[in-house]
Length: 213
Image 1 (spheres, rainbow, N blue to C red):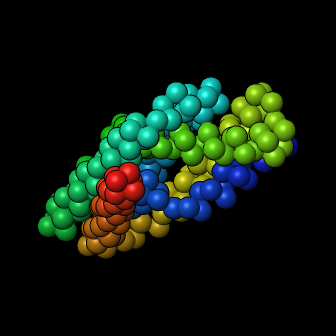
Image 2 (cartoon, rainbow, N blue to C red; image 1 turned 120 degrees about the vertical axis):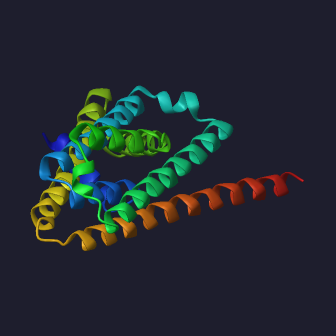
C-alpha cells in the first residue's frame, strides 16, 4: 500500500506540469457533459498505462536511439498542432452558431484523447526515467515498480477526473460565446506549444550539425 501511495503522490506532483493534453481534456469538459468528459479522461489513462507497462518492461531501451527519438519528437509535436487546429476550427464554428456540445460523443472523446496521448512516445522515456530513479532511490524490485506504476497512473484519474468533474458542473451556466472563446484559447495554447516544440527540435538538430563540423 505504501508503494502504491508513493506512486500516486509522485504522479500527482508530476501532473502539476500541465501540458497540451490537459488543455485538450479541459476543452472537452467545457463543451460537453460529465460522461463525455470522463470518456476523454479514460482515453488518457489508457494511453498512460500502456506507456507505464512498456516502461516497466524496459521497451524504452529498445527505441532509445537519437534518430528514433528525433522522429518521435517531430511526430508528437505535429499531432499536437493538428489537434489544436481541429479544436480551433470547431471553436470558430461554435462562435458562428454551431452547437459545439452536440459534436462531442463518448467514443469521439475517448479516441481523440487516447490518440493525442499515445502519439507522444517521449512519454515512454519520461516514465522509464522516473521508474529508474525510484528503483534506485527506494530499492524497488520489479513487483514494487509495477505497484508504483499503477499508483502513478491513478494520479491521472484523480487529477483529470476531479478537474473535468468541476468544470462540467460549472459549464452549464456558461454562454456559448464564452465556451467558444475558451476553446479558441485552448486551441491557441496547443498550436503554440506544438510549434515551439518543433522550433526547438530543429534548432537542436541544427546545433548538433554545426558541432559536428
